[in-house]
Structures are given as structure tokens and as C-alpha cells.
Image (cartoon, rainbow over all chains, first blue to last red; front, side):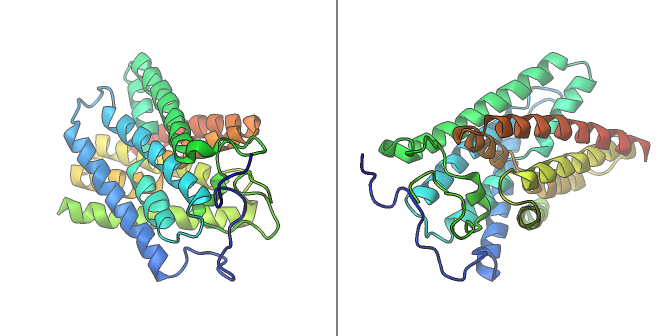
Length: 179
Length: 122
């Protein structure tokens, strides 16, 4: 079944642009995206104010929403907009990274377990993993739209694309599409 | 005032994460997300220390917010962790996906607990 053009396979990359995010512009985009993501997370935390050892709805929310957005954005970048130079540093590396947090997630579990709330700690851990992994999967699947899984069964684009490095020349197949 | 601190700390955390990610990838290659693992474990340890200091030594809440939510929140990432894990599994590398999941949880939670204990001791 023919794929629609541009949804799979290697894209024409920028010759010589070994690290497309280096240089003042993309670095500023990472910094700006990180700042915006951090402010957005702070806003969610303020809106969902909870008891010190209550269920951490704020962190759960940002981590699930951020996983969904990252799934959508990286999949669109890998499939439809492979030559976009701004969305990856601004939204994927900057915003999603700044908005979501692993350190608070880990600390919140430890603190609950330490204060005798082992059940709440376990529920929070499982909910974060199931909803977070599910959100990344659903976001990516929605962004793939009707193109379906790649010919090699690859469901998601290579996460290595996240950092924005070009794949090694003739190296691994980034999107699971035909080389 | 706290918003300015959050903006600066969030920007620094994101840039630091990107820098660590690139360096680890150059050294260990792209086959496994070692960079994100290192970032999340080291950031969890640092946040544990900060929380321990805040509990026992009265570090101000603004400092905790700017460093904990801003710097370490932006430095560590949950979305890359979930996306990488799902991506590895989707490409048939279930073992690597399970290893990433298990290592992130065990080392991340352990690092936060260790940091918390260290922050209490200081």
C-alpha cells in the first residue's frame, strides 16, 4: 500500500547541519520553550493546590499532558514536517521537557511511602506510568493518522529524533519506513 | 519576582538537559536513552537533597520553587521517558523498553530517597 508522500523514509536533511539545534537561534528556542513549559507547570500547580501529602494531581496532569503533546509533535516532525527547524527545540525539547518532570514524580512517591502512605504512593506511580505511556502512544497514533504502522511494524518514530541529531549517514532507519 | 526566577531557572534547566543529552549520546550512541536516564536520576537526587534541606534547615519556599520546580523540573523530563519507552517497545525492543522503565523507576526513586537522606544529614 503506497504511503502518502513525506510520511516515511529519510528526509532531505540540511547538508552539513550536523547538530541543527546548535547556534543561537535553536538554543534560544530551547531556553524559551523550557521557560514557557516551567511557567505553565507552575500555573497548573497553583490551580490544583493540594495538601502536602495529598494525591499529586498537578504533577500527574502535567506529565500525562506533556507525554501526549510530545507524542503528537515528534510523530508529526518525523512524518510530515521533517525539515522543520523550530518545533523540535521549542516545543519538544523546550516546552514538553520544561512542563513535565521526573524529579518531582520520584520525590512525591518517596515522601508518601516514607510517611506511611504506601498505597497512595503505589497508586500514583501506576497511574503516572499507565496514563503517561498511554498518552504518548495515543498522541503518536493520532498524529500518524491514517498512514498506519510502518512497513516494518514500527509504530512510533525513533525517539532518537528527540534530541534533533541527524541520524548517522546510511545508519538506522529513523521512522521505520523504507530506506 | 518568583516568575522571573522560574523563567531563568526553567531556561537553564532545559539547556542543561539538552547539553547532557547530546554529550551522552555522542559517547554511548543512540541505541538506548542513557542520557535521559542520567538526567532523571541525577535530577531526582538533587531534588531529594533540596527537599531534605527545606524540611530540616528551613530553606525558603521561593528558593525551593525556583530550584525545584524551575531548574530541576525543567532539567528532568517525564515526557521523553514515556515517549522513549513506548518507542522502544513499538520497534520490537521490549527488553530495552522494560530496562528503561525499570532502571528509571528504581534508580530515580532510589536517588530521590538517597538525596532526601543526605539533605537531612547535612
